[in-house]
Length: 134
Image (tube, rainbow, N blue to C red; front, side, top):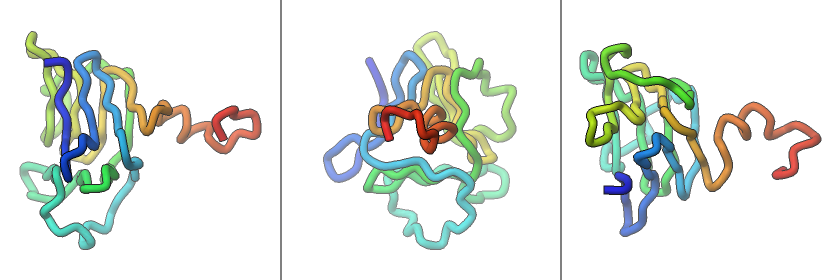
């Protein structure tokens, strides 16, 4: 299998690729989400902190990714090294490619890409006057 995806309304919204990339195809990423009341629970993916049964991540039908925590990529990942892993994507060799941990952090061994742009590059430098993709 080349990738795993989260689909809604007949369209793929988020793709987890076997090279460790996480691609948000339609929506945006929202870090530091604290208000979860606006979500119905019928979203394509809801990730809970297993111990507290607290929502830590939601992917909506529009493809938006809401995280309690933050995004990091280029990580060396093992499920053992994170508290209460909520979602883990592994390859056939049982290596962890990406995850959403119990604190709502999206971690990828590859890059997190949102609508064709590396997320961390845009988040950290999107307002730079020298950015060519503004």
